[in-house]
Image (cartoon, rainbow, N blue to C red; front, top):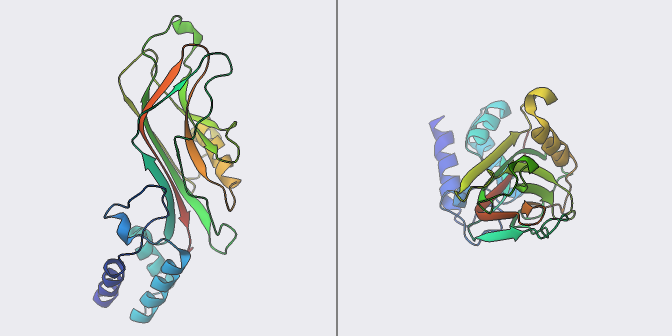
Length: 228
């Protein structure tokens, strides 16, 4: 067992070129040890098999907790942006942050395991009619289809305070629709339709005249399992 973990540790620390497939300009120190291709993961599996007689079921568990059985298609931004609406059609859709295109989705053992969305935003800070609903929100959409998507977070009405929004979905969590909720059920359906070349984006949106959606940061992470 000690040999296994020493080998695994050397493999993670020895390849400084491994980074996540992210649209951010620089990887963090923790990202530097994450695999960027399926080949990195398969090479790790081969080395672990040679270094130990442990069964694949245990190796899978080790790689899972080391976050080394998957690829992360992720991106983040901290630039301020405001979506303005001047009429019933709403603000022009703008992909504030988007993932790199997915790849290898048809390969054996490859599937999307989870998705995490975060954003910090607020509306214009005032409303003329509180009964008219909230029309400052965030949507997640496919880059190929920016007009359609899922509203996953709404800003508090008439507040200029920054609000942190987060939504996580693990596809291994098998909840019924009533328990999971409409948003996560729709997101699960969207994920099931993703293919090679698809990229997901977070879109700050406002609808109807006078509404705004201010955003100061957002992040999206799609975890793609490679070995299962």
